[in-house]
Length: 587
Image (cartoon, rainbow, N blue to C red; front, top):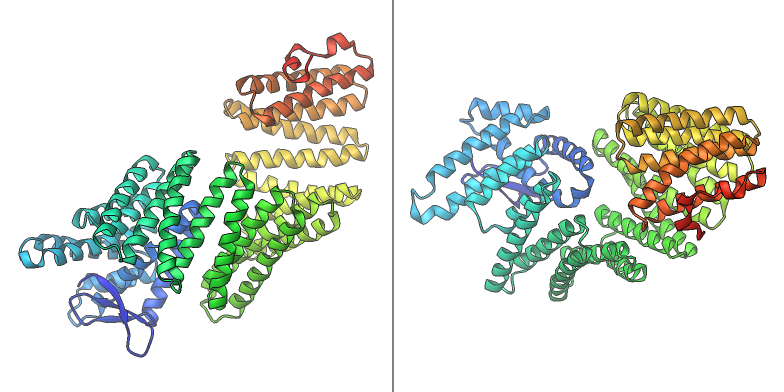
């Protein structure tokens, strides 16, 4: 058995050639397709778990296909050992362990031969590295640490292989070992720079250099060092521009160029340079449009274009250009709905379709939500309501298909919350109350599933507050007070467990303020003052920690303003304006 490489197959299509023999597995081979699709679905789930690294990890799919072809080919030999046949059977059931053991055995065999025939040292090193990389791709599906160890062994055999270094950095990033990843990517840049110096016209070496700079930039961006990240991204852009200039018809170079603009736009957006970010994103859109015009059937390019429209719309929204933002979101919507139709009508495996269907609907829900938020910002509440109802419809459909999927339930609950908010603004308090109560019931179920999930706990408290706010507007003050008390009780219990969580502290302050305002509306000045004092103590403490935090400052201003309003209820003005308010109220 040997490592694999891709080659042409008779009858068309792609094949994987097993080095050292004539066993060729055609990519149309039913067994190869079945195993590879199942493992790719598993890899898709893994990518979802570390979404930020999904672009980087995508390259492992090539190694995964090689691993499958290697094992399948070994099992089809006339003298195939029982372990090879067992490995294939296990792969068909999603178990990669036996295949990893088989590949490790072949790696060790190849490693022992290194140096035995001096004329074949490079080949033996490459064979051992190939087996190690294939193990890494399989291991990644269940154990990122084991995958990293396998690729590190591959680097030991081929220390100058830039792509292996990039894979190692990607896996270190996935594990949160960003300092190690920074060093690895820096090493990759050094290797790629040497390779381009030796072969200036080698596009693969230049591409490796561009990727290495981009990866280092991503780590620096994670660290918050935006200027350094921007510098790396601009170097990646420069290399990508050279590649695209020398071979403008190469779609890979065009995609790399588009991603470079996207990365730069992301940094500029974080830095507050929205006009600069918009310029980069629009370049990204134009490149993606050109690729789609070249091959309208390419769904990956269609998805890239949809994503570019979305991010451009986000920036336009932030700039207050709501009409243009809506146009961008609508363009993305048309593309994604077209893709959803293609997926539905395709003959792909049913489970494979379901994953694509879920991903497509995730994007559709996001687009409808963006359109709703933009419409809401434009005070077009009827349009916002329609869009949020689209989000709810998709979420309910997905939740019905998979009742145990908490993500779909979560999306359904958020949709009810948003719809309730719009109905409340439109004056339909009964409709708003119904929506908020449905959101509340879903939030309760989610917290029962995972009581330690702080985000879900905060959302449950927010649902109580939403119900309470509607009841308050309906003059059901007793019911409103109970909802507010239920909400603050949830926040308080979580804050007691994690007193350093400033989000929970701010939630507590705001909850005390809401209860205080309700009591003040009922002329319960003593009760209102007690709640405001609790809110003030928390708000002032947060503000003192970081006066530059605009959210904490706004919270303190709000509490102090509430204290001032107590004056209208007959409170002593001198006593109603605490000293904690002086830094923000100019007193």
